[in-house]
Length: 71
Image (cartoon, rainbow, N blue to C red):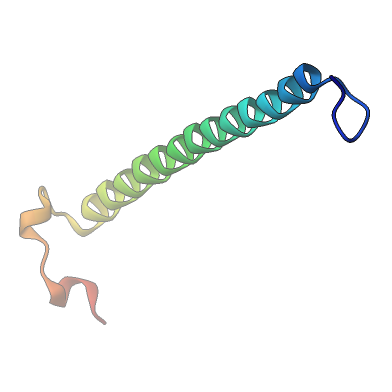
């Protein structure tokens, strides 16, 4: 049996299934990439905060006050 566009029905179903699988793979890949980017950002943020505390002479974030950050 032929489909409207001239492809056998089974072939057209394979194409649709393949497209759905490709979209799923792409979305998983993008989610994994975004997670890696967020993890790197978080690590850099914590590193920067540690540097800031060291420059200010603070040993812990608990010792940091609002007046320490304002000019």
